[in-house]
Image (tube, rainbow, N blue to C red):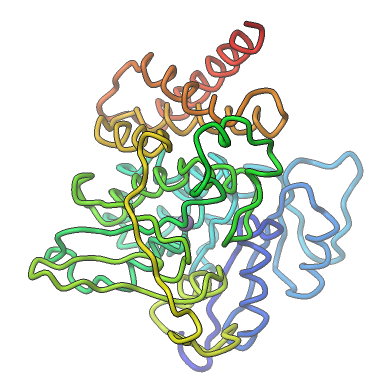
Length: 386
Ligand code: MN
């Protein structure tokens, strides 16, 4: 990023929670960025508003609309094909992958193939296909800079990964930290959606309540930083000020701290390796915070975290089973079809039916994902009628 040259960026998922916050960051750093493409799902009105403001070369919308969507002189692309087109456009210096779900996987691989750096906010990419994605990035010399606050923190702490003994990932503990298992079993979606620290999309908020989100993050961390699962520790830290830490061989611990705002990790990822004032609103104060608490997670209560470690350690296609069954269960919970605590049982059931494939190809992964989703939905129908 030279003084004259703007960094050319595309945002996949610009109308979502991360996408809109990324545009708030970019608005503050207007002289640093040029937007190549914006892609939104179905919120066409918001995407139009963004396009007017940020003037991308083209936009991509989820599905072909019944009527022609008019974006003036901005070219309109559609669906997965559109995402692929954005990700193979070598005008991009960096692509922020902020779509949720497996739809992020193929475009990310296309961008890596095109030698474009990735600011990664999509969990499925590494959980489902971490081996493939990281190997390809290495071969292509592409940077993958994590947006997720924990991985972003670790990315900021690490100077030399070979000297690191342990990753310490913090977890707020979500809305059920102080509640009993009984409370959790009977929690309606509104209670589970009331996250004490972070304002996020619905799916990830439920995952935070069950700590499955932390489990997914452990799997991501394993791939991003090439760390054994036994050397990744999760610690409960309700204030969400320490975003994660690492321990070096000699016992030195480096942590990254900040107020809980996604603007900071988003800005870090898209401006890396530079830093700017940008979105910063006020200076950090230890004395205003006063307390930082830490404790071990209760793996009896938050079974999903334990299941994620199991899935990660078994490896191969097992994390696909974990991720797909969880996602289907979370959607069913949000539709009030199952209880919150059923999510763990549903994941276990699918993991028990595991049919191991050691080094699954991308096609294997996508097929297994589809299969597990179908089996999960059938299983949920059965338990709902009992
Ligand atoms: Mn996170």
